[in-house]
Amino acid sequence: MLAIDVAYVGLLVLAAFSDARRFIIPNILPLGLLLLGILAWFVGFPFSGPLWSYILHFAVALGVGMLMFHFGWFGGGDVKLYAAVAFWFDFSEGLFLLLITSLSGATIVLLSILFRLLRTAFGSTPTDKGSWRKRRIAYGLAIAAGGIIALLSTYPLPSTGV
Image (tube, rainbow, N blue to C red; front, side, top):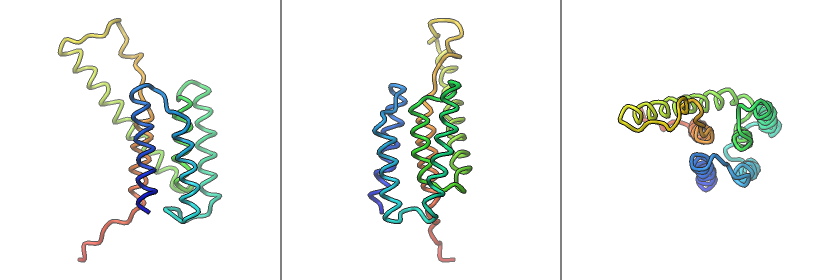
């Protein structure tokens, strides 16, 4: 079902763009991902396991995310987006999704630091001392990248005919 894939990727790209631009992920995007996931599950795509396993992954992701939000480590939109993405993968695939999303986040943080260092090296300095430490990171980018990569990994590799 190519239409479901396109809608999934489209919603994640919109969430990433919104988060990168304004540090806000509109509630309609995680809700859309969740509703699309429920629809996809009923048509049998790309889900293969029992529904309870997907609901469990969603619930655990939402619960842990809410704790992270409580301590100020994660934004509310990020929590909802990650939980909605988690619904697309059964509980046994949760560690892989978390790993891919974390690696995407680490890459974004490293690129952000590198970009800021290059800007500083070439004459563009921050307005106040230590402001580079106070910069926010749009985790929606990492969640979107992790969700897209994880979905792509569910597809079988093409046969070479060897």
